[in-house]
Length: 169
Image: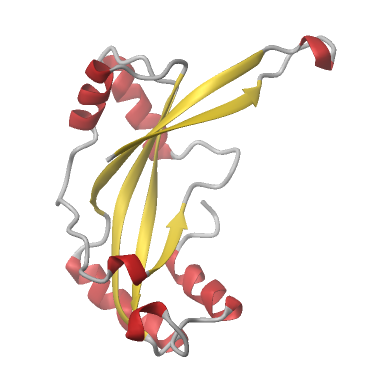
């Protein structure tokens, strides 16, 4: 699934604020494959359930964000989709719409090693992109479809999220 997002950012300049160049980056999202093996899901589930007993399943998929100077044309989208299709395909759980979603992204202001390598590969393939980043979308299936009383409160959500990401990255 492709979704286009426009992102505006100021680039640093040595001149006064009013004369700084304004650049619009186009973000295009590409659905990725399975980000959590069955083995890792089986290991992670009991730890999540220890933080909140209402969790009955966990799955995760990769989502790729591609930043480019212009809106990508169909040829570029096709090449990027081909480049970003790897690994085991993600199959959405039947109750995914009611699952608690947790997005894990790189720390703001950093470029992950994965992004650096993926962007280099895209450039070596002649693709005009600024950056490619990968985020992970976890889906926690809850008993009762995510409705009360099994929905976690804010503190429980923080505890669950702490199990799903590395604070250092």
